[in-house]
Image (cartoon, rainbow, N blue to C red; front, side, top):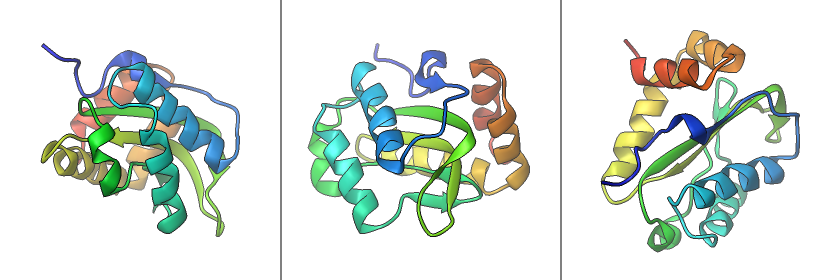
Length: 146
């Protein structure tokens, strides 16, 4: 039995603001340490963000690897980093929640759509931004657009 896609220890709360690249690297390293991806996947995440910003709006960025890095994915997983002061993703886009995603096969789109449904609502992002516990973050994500 593999790991769950989102575990409590996949969440980092209350991080100090840092650069976009550092934030992408942080969630990438967390995906690596949790056994979801190989280290090279981080390069794919950075490459994707250089090509098309992984900032999604509503204070959320979702770094993930480009297609040619899919082979670096070992298991589907999500990691979440909360930055109360935000991370500058350029062009006046500030991310308070940075979600690293690795999806195997079709799971990739399922994971993305679940998260997209959650973060399309500003009040959910506000709740994620202000969450005090990892359990609270998981509950908000799992409730999604309910």
